[in-house]
Image 1: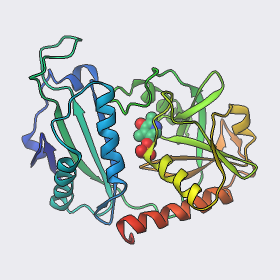
Image 2: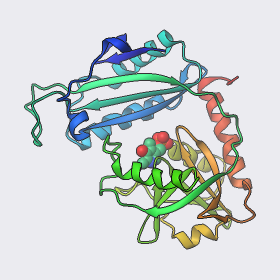
Image 3: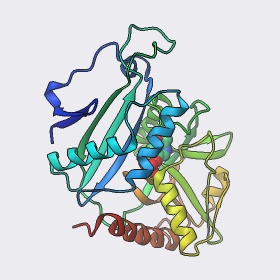
Image 4: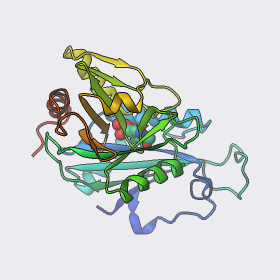
Length: 284
Ligand SMILES: *Cc1c(COP(=O)(O)O)cnc(C)c1O
């Protein structure tokens, strides 16, 4: 631990200082990614790095590195830090420039930062989580993994103050996603999740899960669902790089079905664990 990628170079964390006029610091003007590392290997690394590029493009930020260059540096960082199980956090801001809302001139280079954090592998089956519904107060470009996370932070705080694990956001009763995760339900054996639109962040875990559904004949539809449908569903689950695929067994204090993880979720957790092993080797 303790190393950091700063603009393409690996440095000691204590040698890097953030400029007070970094646009990420002043405006949240930037984008980020979190990539899981299992067994010292990146899980779905290409998908995450391509999404970082897509997010940058959507905010009209020119990235001075290629996906391959970032990947090379990130792998060096994993090896320097001897990271086995954990995550890599990375962000790109629109650079350092005197404070003014409009984009800086084109000679101002984005600032790239990445570092690792150890997280033990939770095992294949995760215990059921508690959810709470809350209004989705965010902007209309939720498909960008932006550093502007105030709406998400406010939602997560609602969950924490209620002793819950995740906030389930909705717009006028239609569920969008969690504060930092995607939400799916199971109705009549079919998995249902919000379509990848401007109203959600299209999670890599969500995409991997849908591919697993397709490959293993688990029926699914990408359709928005209401809070009522969710409360009456057979199963509710949420997905992200950190929680992988985790059942939600109570929402707003009410049990979902019998209040225990359901068979579709458990099957997906098993398939996801197999996918981790396929990509990264067996996790101790
Ligand atoms: C990152 C994130 C997710 C989950 O995406 P993964 O790629 O699966 O980690 C879902 N919703 C929001 C708002 C996010 O920021």
